[in-house]
Image (tube, rainbow, N blue to C red):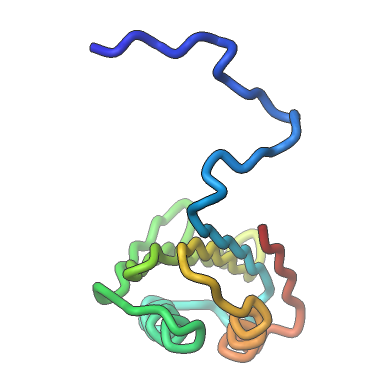
Length: 129
């Protein structure tokens, strides 16, 4: 069993972020918005596969989805270069959130525009990091 790291190795928030592996490309994008209609299983699967093509990622598996009676829909797709998660709520409002994490660069504007169009969302926000 490995002993725990010394406390000096831990970085507590809200200290400044630092890139611990600058030689490894990592790109993240969160997209959130209000869909025009409730989102269902088939839409999530279609969206995640189509998103793969839009941002030029190699899809390794068919998208996986799950519905929670408490929290709504969730979906995930595995790409050769990481993947994306999708979440959709009906209550307390129609809302979706997409988390994209890749080790291959992609155009975030393409992902945002595609997502807004796919869900006919008039209000969409995005944050990359």
